[in-house]
Picture 1 (cartoon, rainbow, N blue to C red):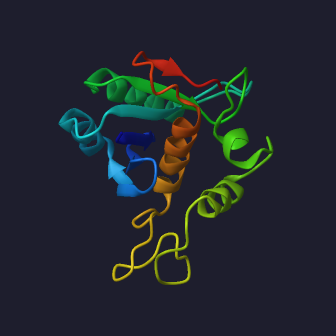
Picture 2: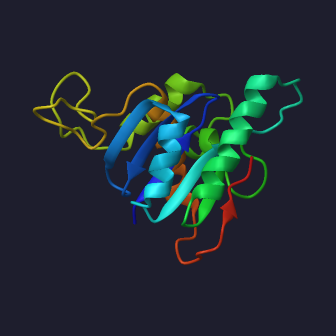
Picture 3: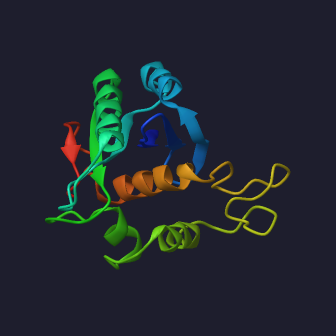
Length: 171
């Protein structure tokens, strides 16, 4: 199964294509129009997008622009989609709890938890990522693609693969 996972932003987003064992494509800063083209290309079996949630604080224009892009991505997808939330709320854990088992974990903790889940088979200082000459299973992942990978790994760990319906992993 090939999953397209997106960390949406106001104008640019991070994305990865993930097969459950390795990243097959990563882009850490792709313009949203180009992301929309990737969604339309249909070179994946399921779409997972990190969803914005309200945590009681006021939000501004940027948040609403991001939500608009999330809607465009899922509407354009020719395959089922899942909205994945950062924080847990309910029976299915969000990204932070799923990867770190700590509701207070920050991005650095999430990145470390992701690295710990993959074999150190590549070259360089971070062999899970590797180098061009010796790529690891996470080759190409950087910046916002780490967040997209967190969406992908969370989806693979909690999605009932037998069910083809649209799902929402709790906030």
